[in-house]
Image 1 (spheres, one colour):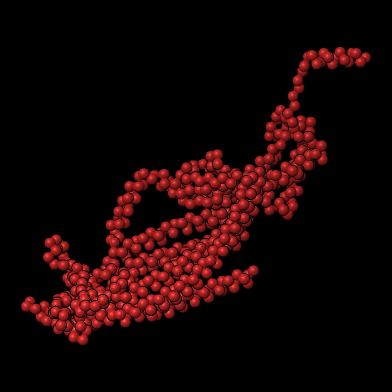
Image 2: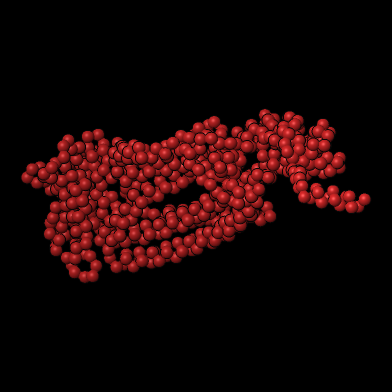
Length: 592
């Protein structure tokens, strides 16, 4: 069985490596945009925004067919131009993009495909206007009349580190190359080749997606097997919980709890693999769509958009998921290390079991808290990546939280009470407690609620704020307060000796000696009742074993009393009937 599991794990790892190599081979064919090839200057506000600040200048990119050609710049505006006499940096970049796209998508020369200029005679010139500003002009000396692309400002040249004239000449070369590339990519030969590339990419992606589907199908079978195992463990747990007042074996409960924890770890690992494969599936098709969109100039704007906000959000989601998973593993690792270190101190079995219950409870709470923290961090980073001001949003959420806190005082009380329950160790997962009229084993708890599994498998959920008095019957140690009644004519001292002898014999047996801490804490006559003399004996036991020991002690004591002729007490009542007494006396006289 272990060899089969190891082989399956090895095949899973090999397939994942194969998928990774395939994706790397596809990624290596990317044509790196200028946006990523350049060393982008970081923003003082947001590292992923298109508008960045350098010194006293702000800049924005000019993007044509999904490629960043260059960046334009302007001084940081001190006041907002309410009359909009001067365009903003983004508006100016958009105007330049519209000019270039207008030339590329025009049909001055007719035909079914865009042909806005003659590539053989295309000319980009730099001229100086009457005010001394450099202008970039384009024409083909035929159908495309000379038109101004944009005016180069001193801020543009300063941002890029050149003089106005030198930067204008460089811009003329960049714009001509962009126009020629756009022209070629709009011709039938290129579009036909791009269609073939798209079909090939779809075929490769389909094969990879099918391989991932096979892995998902295999994991689904494992998930079904785990669910069947969970049903068996649940049935066993319910069987132990059905007789809470008469019997329950703490060792069995502890073993079931350990198996459920192991099942949960296996289930979480399986779910993580399924999520990972779904992510691989998503990445395969997202990459396919992005790459196909990059092939065609008409859809490159969509590819450029996909490589920004959606990509950032996907990366954030992946990183948050990984952080949550790593936090979960670290919490399990450290708590397990603490538990093993605690066990090395040669503490008693009951203390070790108690520590196990506490660590199990801490694990649930810490995982929930760490998950909430990472989700909050991911939310803040996502807002920042979308260029949404974080401070106002956080402040607004704080105000909303403050307003809700006045109407959610019960929630705050539940959380605070849950914190004190954990810190003061009132109870933990696996303890048998009584709250008001509700009794049962603590199956789950966090900072807000406690769930108790009682008789007939009933699961009761209690807000922690409603728990004021709790009786814990399985903490540190437990005790049997045993009482029985014998007849008045029986020998009391002899009966007490028999009770002591029976419990001492049990304490000396291997099956019971670890469970019985003190065989006789107290023994004697507790009451003189109508039915007989009531005898009492108290027995100190390990937590959770008192019901099992009491049940076995009653069985042995009954047999011992029968062997020694000691009668149990019973209610007797004498009834005097005069008529019956007279009739009996007459019958006695007649018999003489």
